[in-house]
Image (cartoon, rainbow, N blue to C red):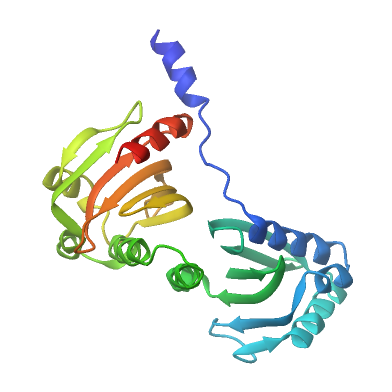
Length: 273
């Protein structure tokens, strides 16, 4: 029975798919460059296309549509190879991910943000990898502009920054006094109070990364999403559906974690709350 259970747990997927129309467009851009087809990229661009550059080493703060087309031609002429990985999406038109551009043995990794309008790229932005959270902040700012939940974006943004480079004291300011954490996963930690939950993650605060990869449903102050929580060495502790609630003081009041195959359970708990 123990061997059977071990095999069953070991077969679970280690990550959920993160994708939308914007991330699919980014992947098509990579394929176009790798195929040497600049016209395919041009067909993806909105007439109002701009590309904002936030990395330290840059030739300008913004590229126009023509600038971006010329840069892509230069990349293709230099036999560049592009690969991308989606990190987080909002709706269908917003995505953040990593893009790796290689020229022979040399390569550069950046964080990209893509915004679509009418299915075309209206705005792109690139960031150095150590400005990863700036890209996620911008992703949620754009989402709120499009009608996304402002309260949740504010609370989850504060939580994300505290986990990444804050302190346990700052974490306490984000968590309500009556906070409850419920871990529904087969190997989860059950139900924990505010203090026991803070104690369990306290040693990771200041060096971990938590990301809301996809937002699925929001109603009042209840949020159903998929997210990850990873340590500084890349070890992933959480990767799956979750339900979160906040209070009128914009603090976390409840967090329920679920495994990949418990999506229906997560939806049911969302509806109950």
